[in-house]
Amino acid sequence: MAKPGTHNALTDISGISVGYFTSREAASGVTVILVPEGAVGGVDVRGSAPGTRETDLLNPMNLVEKVQAVVLTGGSVYGLAAADGVVRWLASRKLGFPLAGGQVAPIVPAAALFDLGRGADFVPPIGPAWGQAACEAATDGPVAVGSLGAGTGALAGGIKGGLGTASERLENGLVVAAIVAVNSLGTVIDPRTGRPWEIALEMNGEFGAQGLRAARLPEAEPAAPPSNTTIGVVATDAMLNKAQAQKIAQMAHDGLARAIRPAHTMFDGDTIFCLATGRKPLPETKGFFAAPHAQAINELGRAAADCFSRAVIRAVLEADSLGEMTAFRDLPDLR
Image 1 (spheres, rainbow, N blue to C red):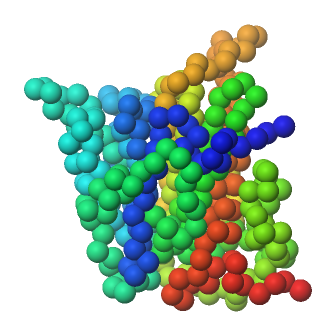
Image 2 (cartoon, rainbow, N blue to C red; image 1 turned 180 degrees about the horizontal axis):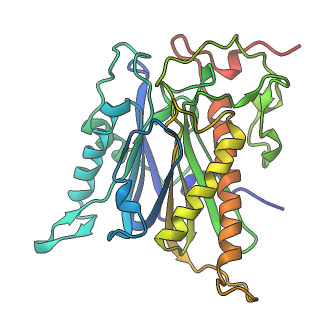
Image 3 (cartoon, rainbow, N blue to C red; image 1 turned 60 degrees about the vertical axis):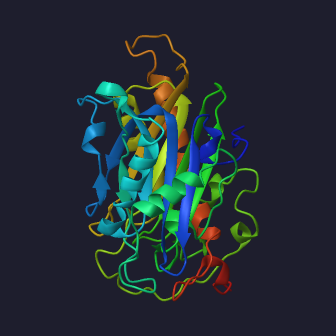
């Protein structure tokens, strides 16, 4: 039977820590995933309105194998500046791609979601300082979820979005986890039932009291494009190459599309990164095919998709209302 990891969070992957900076006044924030020892990275961008940084570097054909951090940020194009603070924080600790003279170039891919106009000012005062603050707050313990970090000003299908995380320990001993900031055009809630589309994936009562409710969604209003994007990271302690990491990121989008309907729209910049810390070898399956790791990749991808769906649901169910954005917990019951 599938089980979550100790924290049911991305930090169940040894070597990864998560930090965030939150400004409720600005209705925006930053989430930083730190991997000081480096992790093999992959990415898959499916939405048509992405805001990203350093994604080309993760192409399996390109040079650099490992990244030291990934930034998920609010603030749209302005928010990508938070990654500069993460780069400088890592550089001050000599963490990065080695250069001449003992210098380093920290590798920090990033993705931004659109939360402009939801706080005190249309453009939140986001920048390198927010990224540095998120690094300083990073922990490898439990990860808070809801209206914080990159999910602070998020809106999901007309109700409050947020930040969510989940993990799964596989029977083969590998661990898979996800973290996501949900700011989608599509809805996480089935309007016919008032419950999340993928509610059946729940593990160990992780959705709590809100997971038992059926809520009445507000009347849908047309989105003001481009005002969406769901961004996240899946991770594993398995030993992967860049092509395999890219495949896991690709399969994780299945979980996004099951949990958010519709997904990958013209107004979403849906982007998922994959990090592999390489602590454990991939199990091999002998047989006709010349790819002995193929079955293990299949199982990692399945788990990544399921973890991503569960993280999406936790983000929305744990969110708090902010400004004019009403959270699921504050919606009336469906009768």
